[in-house]
Length: 104
Image 1: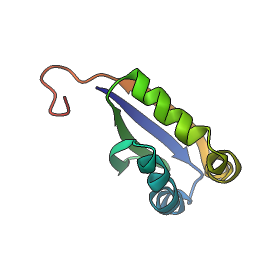
Image 2: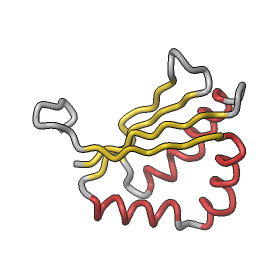
Image 3: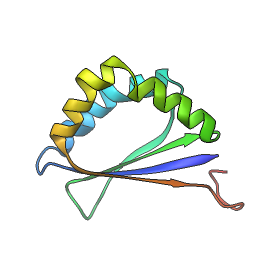
Image 4: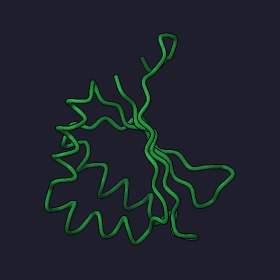
């Protein structure tokens, strides 16, 4: 199993708008491609930070699902431009759970 820890810095004052859009427009597209979203989170310390976790069985599954989502016309013409208008930074960390992890 692979997990992505995704951290976004959102334009100041736009985090709630970003979350509403993400949950209504982006999550269904990701889930339709088979992506498993473990959860979405906001920072208690940074009002502009948004996080979410995604899990994949392996790198091959991740690659196929990335192609389905990020290669789609919907992503390229509609979703990505909207995301880029609201994000000031995006960071992705790919991690593997340890043997004792509850997420293993």
